[in-house]
Amino acid sequence: MPGLEIAANPTRVVVHPLVLLSVVDHYNRVAKNTKKRIVGVLLGQVEGNTVNVANSFAVPFEEDEKNPAVWFLDHNYVDTMREMFKKVNAKERLVGWYHNGPKLRSSDLQINELFKKYTPNPVLVVIDVQPKVIGLPTNAYFAVEEIHDDGTAATKTFEHVSSEIGAEEAEEIGVEHLLRDIKDNTIGTLATRVTHQLTSLRGLAERLADIRSYLEQVLDNKLPVNSEIIQNLQDIFNLLPNLTIPDDSSAFTVQTNDEYALIYVSSMARAIIALHDLINNKIENREAELSADATANEAKNAAETQAASTDAAQPAGSKDAAKSS
Image 1 (cartoon, rainbow, N blue to C red):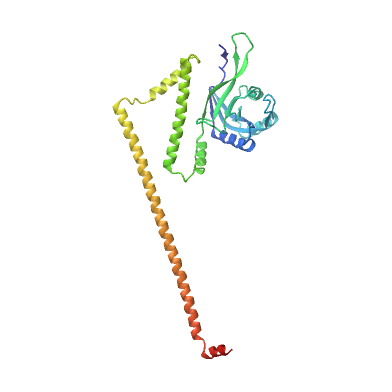
Image 2 (cartoon, one colour; image 1 turned 135 degrees about the horizontal axis):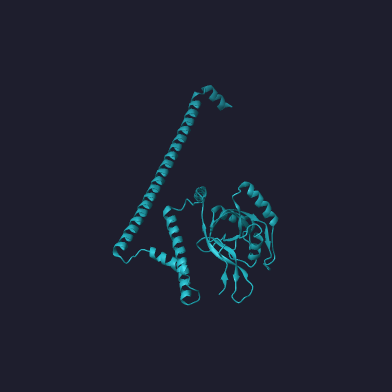
């Protein structure tokens, strides 16, 4: 079996929301509705076994669609931008690079070697800007040497490491305000909660399918047994409640019914209040229309009365002269 030299590599990559927003903006400006790939630089810090990716910037990149080995990356632009970012925030250093994937490509190892000019162990984060499945849109990789037992030369390959989305308090507040601004106010709270629950259930179903597929491949001897994965699965199963106990099952049922009853009553109250406001609005509009009509009628009657008074006040001679003429 081949071995991998992975001792020096971090085991965890934390990507901040600012990076995701920057990558999506980069894609929309450069490669939207095309097959073109975008490439950029990741900035942050390496703290022990964790890479903290806090910022990024886009890089001019071109490649031949027919021949992936032919590509161009403006490293002079990278040098200039890196020096400028050092002046703004000296703590943020170049830690790796990104592209929009959604999968690894044959030229990634060559591009990764170029970034070793700036950092000895760059991280590659593949960010899917148009995810088709529910889950994290990031996948992180480090380049490692694969040593073969048959004595042949070692080859480079990418090793996947865990990635997650993390944010500082200020970033969390900014993301909350952003989500609040793009929220569709026409959708009720109940509909939003149901949508979120359905999304969570779909994500859970996909994870369970992955677990089942892995265990079946282990049973069929297609994959080796990984004690760490098995231990994590056992910890997950231990956290699940035992619904075979009547008291636990009854407690879950009562709590669920109480929550649904609260949601139902809240939705009914909201509908009644909205209907009440609608009726009041119609009454106010009707009263305003009646008031406007009454004012118009009063003005019309006053004008007619004034005209009649004017006719009655004219002298009789004036009327005879007007008739003879």
